[in-house]
Length: 119
Image: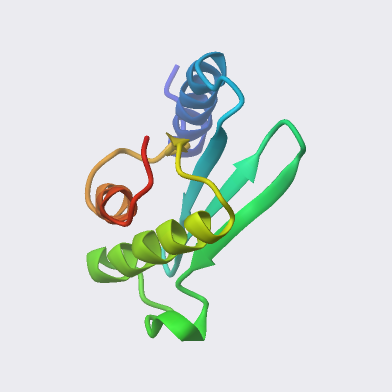
């Protein structure tokens, strides 16, 4: 009964998201997506169903187009923290999805914390 990597990823993502929803208390969700080529993050208000802010390595402003390394994740984390402050959000919860909290995901989270987001 071997599960594929994709099945394990989807189970992990649902487990993480369901645990976080129980503790949300109306806070915004900082959702992360990491592919082989890019990394992106969104600040989502689940009550209203709208995206408050987003950042990605696909943006030319950040200067890391098409890169997916720790340095690029740090720049994206700093950008989302800045944009969250403009949107009036200081407290959120970090939804890592099915991704493990190390490497690029950890670098993005730490940069967002240094930028002023609290989670």
